[in-house]
Length: 334
Image (cartoon, rainbow, N blue to C red):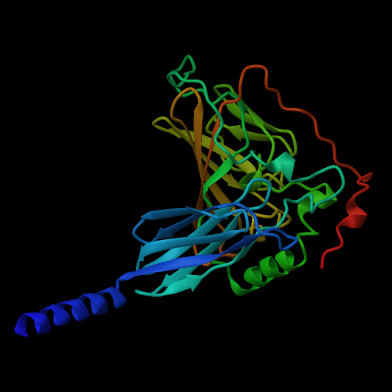
């Protein structure tokens, strides 16, 4: 009898421990703008930097289980749709938190002639040539070449001031109808090379970015200072210097017309951008962008991107946007 009672006690203790598991879970459904479930990749990253991954089914359902209790940043991507991010998701021990995600279409807004197929693989890593980092005659890394779209590795965690947060939410709720490209305006450096390849041309005194869908940009490497007034307020005035094998670019002199990220955050003319470019080998380029705008954000925040060298023969095309934008009437908002 005593042995039987001991066994029952052990079983109850085990069940109690299981019920009080320190692990939690996140589940939900991923849908497209039409409300249909889509297959997607889901990532949860906690404050300790640990990452947990899952894939949603064809119906859009997903589940991340056995998560240590804590706070998570959720990122969800599906080919041809804009990514979804949600910071500060609290996962208590022994509980399942629900995070549903509706992924919008890209900036085409489903317009005629543009569909998800066009965007399906632009954010995927591409095959890249292998070999050492090429160098200029003076020994500096040579960043020259045609590069694929700059994809997000870490979108950062902006903490916007109240007015900027309200503006961002209004733009998102309004289907991004006033996105700068709908008026033939550029985004600015933080969103350049968003969906199309770009070229870097480097000399000892200047480095130039040539974009298919953005204004070209120059980075001066000759030691000059910023002028009192920028001649290129949409892309700013940029000067660069080398920190070992990393090119550090300092850009100021912006107007307040650009958008900064997928969340449609605005900025003021106080915007100060610091970029770090590192070509770690022949085929890979890593970029870190720190955004500092005290008129918009509580503190500076950093975005990390990466890309690969395009195959030989790839070129940057010409994209022309002008007043004959026939699709503008379809950007109706909500």
